[in-house]
Image (cartoon, rainbow, N blue to C red; front, side, top):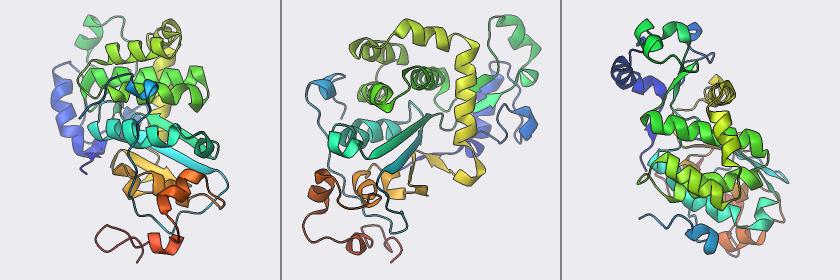
Length: 290
């Protein structure tokens, strides 16, 4: 499955888009010019998942280098309008999230930033500042333009305010269920109301400096050099990037990161008699570590 490349390969396109808004973006911006320490890099009904949770079985084939732990740490780096990110949440994340036994052993962290850029006020033209007196800085430029920046910030505020994945991950899954056919305003509001989230509080966060600060922090996390991220979605399991999970095949590598006894969903997925080593030589050309 294709992925969305990181911000460096998108910088020229963003430069052209930014020029229309009077934002000055260098083709090779220095670290000091950005708010982060590095260069920032068939649709189901919207509420069907809450009425009847449907998931697709993963068929990924794993990585023997994922260390097995009692509770697996799952990190997902994404952006809110990337079609492959939407698919990952609407299918694979939905599948694991609906299984209470499995979720008790998953420590999930999500980072809605993706290939965005953070541009400090000193790099914004005087003309832009003149016409946008109410602008909050830094300014964010996203791969899928302003709608995606709004979606990223809404979810950043939800993560901060709702605190626990049990409360904020359903918002991301629900918004993803709309696909890219509807605006972020519709998907976030309707999902928030359906889930009983105080959307007035989320809006206050988005409209304030707090929202910008939260998104900038996610940018720092999403562009850490040691992450070596080259695209989105980017899935890390127990500290190891798992390529098959990026392609939406999340369940098997996630289960392989768990010590035995594994949850029943994992056992059903593996089938009887399949060992960790047998799964290691899976479907991609050349296998994984074979």
